[in-house]
Image (cartoon, rainbow, N blue to C red; front, top):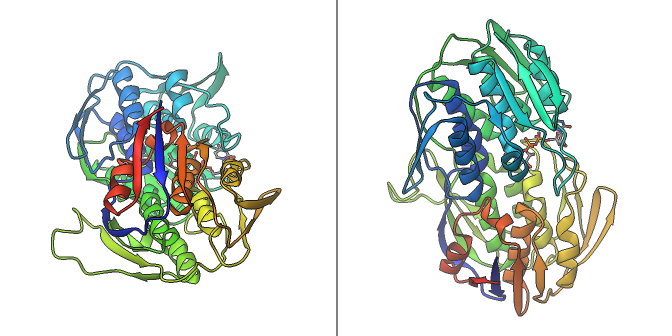
Amino acid sequence: MDKIVIEGGSRLQGEVEVGGAKNAALPLMLAALLTDEPCRLTKVPGVADIDTAGKLLAGLGASIERRPGGEVLIDCSSVDQWEAPYDLVRKMRASFVALGPLLARFGRARVSWPGGCAIGSRPVDIHLSALARLGAKIEQRHGYVEADARQLKGGHVIFEKPSVGATENLLMAACLAKGSTRLENAAREPEIVDLAEALAKMGAHIEGAGSSIIEIEGVERLAAMDHEVVSDRIVAATYLVAAAITGGDVVVRGARPEHLQSPLEVLTAMGATIETPTLPTGSAGPGRAGALRLVMAQQPRPLQIGTAPYPGFPTDLQAQFMALACFADGDSTIEESIFENRFMHVQELARMGAEISLVGHRATVRGAKLLSGAPVMATDLRASVSLVLAGLAARGRTEVLRVYHLDRGYESIEQKLSCLGADIRRERD
Ligand code: UD1
């Protein structure tokens, strides 16, 4: 198994490029199931979760070709299976989003029950009750969700909570349902908007994506799609935190500032200077992406954050900002209200000397600590990157074990940080 070894203390400086968001690319790949015409995605990140989605599609009978540079060609004309097996869903919960498109196009689906995961119980009740509103018959047998619907019918769904995965499942299912569907209390994440844009290119009729009410008018069939994946706001913000935690000066190319309003406000309040530099034409990466420059010329001020659905502060950045809070000149408070067990990094940061007290969903981080490098264990994707960030600013050597968590969502992170001046390498454990 690989580990990441970091000698802390280097100030990061330079430019780094972020690619497409894996959390957008995954449902987009599954959206290809909705048509028998070929689909082409670009800016798909080279991360392990994308390999898992590829395996899932191939297992269903799709042909999938990955080309260098993030191009993925998917042809679902020969899909003849309807099952997302336990092995893949266990590895990657996002596989559960195959349920909606399979049901919509083939009238049936068998998807493994996801079960718990490192950051909490993460139920799927909202997905299932909403699909039932569109006429799906759903049963749980032998650890699988079995869903049947000869013809989905449009319906009125009021989500109990804004769930990203449930909104994606319903959005895809409703595109091929008969009649109109109204989704209320829908998730508003940029990845949902990206999915809706791609579905519209396939011929879907969708209004309101990005707001909490989405209306979909079902169509009989969907066609080919060619789509560039929206840039990864979580990876972009992770590099901004890397700059802030090392007192650095970094330009993140490919970032979409409008998707990062809440984290940028926090970074600014902590004392960072953030600009949107004008880059020479062609240098900001393809498509609609821009750039962000962060300079941190002082010790960070403490932060107060509470995670919330978009446009609130993302739970996927909570661990990274906690690492940063350890170096602030005062005590910070962090409330996690999306996932009940998303503080697994606290124990590992404590091994590096951090003082963090936990009461229920609230963490208090004692600032002004000088962390010292230590061997630490990654427990999930974002927790693992928070340990890398802490290691960049700690004194001495940090070894982050169980790097496969990191590889699920960060492409070439050690090369990118190394180009910014970090002393970081990957080693076989
Ligand atoms: C997605 C993201 C993940 C991010 C999360 C929240 C992907 C692949 N993953 O996960 O990185 O951390 O959004 O922004 O895009 N819930 C229920 N019942 C359900 C579904 C969800 O109670 O049926 C709860 C969850 O336990 C959680 C909240 O709703 O408390 C939000 O979860 P959800 O938005 O569904 O997360 P995911 O789509 O799994």
